[in-house]
Amino acid sequence: MADGDTHIVCPSCGGTNRIGAGKALIAAKCGKCHEPLFEGQPAAVDAAAFDKQIGRSDIPVVVDFWADWCGPCHAMAPSFEAAARDLEPKMRFLKLDTEAEPAIAGRYNIRGIPNLIVFKHGKILAQQAGAMNASALKAWLAPFAG
Ligand code: ZN
Image (cartoon, rainbow, N blue to C red; front, side):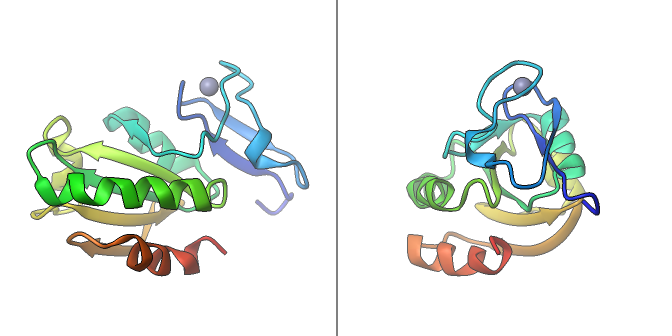
């Protein structure tokens, strides 16, 4: 990011986009598939899309590790969606289904869900196990949203 450009990974096709300094991220569209790079909502990812997003994004990426059978995960989903509306494009919001992608959950040693991890350039900045309400979630994410 030394040149002022920001690399943003498209949630639709996984293509890496380089956005010039000063360009509005919120309005940016993917150069490859022409979908918006930010839709103000969490994007569901599989293992391949997850690796691209956390490895190539210049913005922090927060991942909700969840599963369909998990009641607290469903309870927290609206708060996560509200945070995405507020904080994109300062951060990317992703949801990873731990049942569909157990290898990713295993890589991060996730035993209980919901489990949230904030990544930057592939490194873990913060991790939180257990559900949070909307205000606690926003307060937890605020330092990363700059
Ligand atoms: Zn795309």
